[in-house]
Length: 631
Image (cartoon, rainbow, N blue to C red):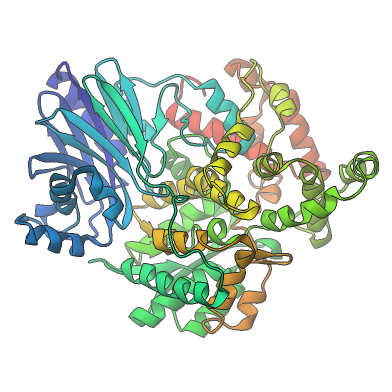
């Protein structure tokens, strides 16, 4: 895995200006690629590239690479590069290296943009053609690897990381008010926005072409495009799924460095570990747990049982509040934007510990979005029944009473009332409003109460509607899965895993996001994946022989931090500093009344407002690390 950044100026570059910018960008990208750092500079282009060597560890594979009449800055892994290399050799191309980067260059030379659908892997790259004076930015199908860009008057800047991009640009960009509104609403900045004004994220499965005459962008991958087969027989669907899944795991075992697997108590990572054991024998597995936390947060016992069943070499890592405190600074340093998914912290610690033993880890990311694993999908099935109740009963009795229910993840009964309260708050809306509501942490009304300056209404419902429409003629459940796959997955889940693993120089690979696995699932009707009371139905049936029955019977758990108890305990000072009225007044972004009310509600146990408070904590930490003028 690697880090990239670059600058194109069609009017010509000033080397005295560019070289210090390259130095700063490479310093920022070092953790993404600690093994080597390189640069390419000519009259109009300057590329920076750091490398975490996974394939072809020799100097011949150094980045950026200038061969076959092209130049590339590249971050990713192409799993089928040996097959593509063989085709290119047969067509007369010759290679100086043994890895995948040069295959990209020769493949682009041979096939141009038609190369992209041929690639099996995760990638983000910038490719410069000095003859035609064009630059191409390309990103993998599901956005596993990040790529940001900004068009300028005479060219563009790009980067794996906003901070590296701004190093190449030579300035920090002001905050984008709409992106800030979305961040406060969701806890993360959805693509194509970035927190920086006029800096955008290239959407998954897209290609952008830049020249002196301007920019154009197109989608090169469309999951909703017609494909065969469309499954009517569950048995055939299950057999094809097993075939594609095992092939996806096998492809991700190719490396010249040690590999392992993140093993939680869930079925996604367990199925990956089971497939790895079948194909490669001894497997190293790792899980994380929290000292003294309630059972809601604990995955270690379930992971240990799976590890014993599969015979993996298993290691459990315990995170105590003091460990979390010590990890906060390096974690926030690794985040190039405000990001308030608190599970980033255990992901950072897990990645740090795993990196002591392996360089590559396989992970179950994407399994929930592809096969319907989250509890909210069950909520979607139940919403129709709820809406059959008389409206006067719902709005006049049930919903007002639900707002009075207590919530506490540390107490089983109150955790159930918390879920019920959330369900009732969203279930009466239309399908777009419900999907937006399951994601939303802050209402539009609360956003305006919080903001010291009026922020534009976040276009959350419109963004969800667009991604649901992209699913074409899919049934309602598949429309919801499609929207999550291209909305929350690349902007939240994959950001968390990419930034936290790369902050520790660990490469993470996701078999459930192999395009053949995703396309196989997309060809199934929603009820193959989800029925009342059972998510991931096809997974449970297709792989029933690989895990003990108890593994499939465990209730769904999120990878969550016991943040509520920590914010009223060991992290209370951190919380109070983030919402200090004097600080908020000086910043001029937030009013203090609502954050202080959140803190009081959390301290008294009246409401679990930890997610809202963590959103402000994460924003303040980002400012301290990357926008000191705002801190």
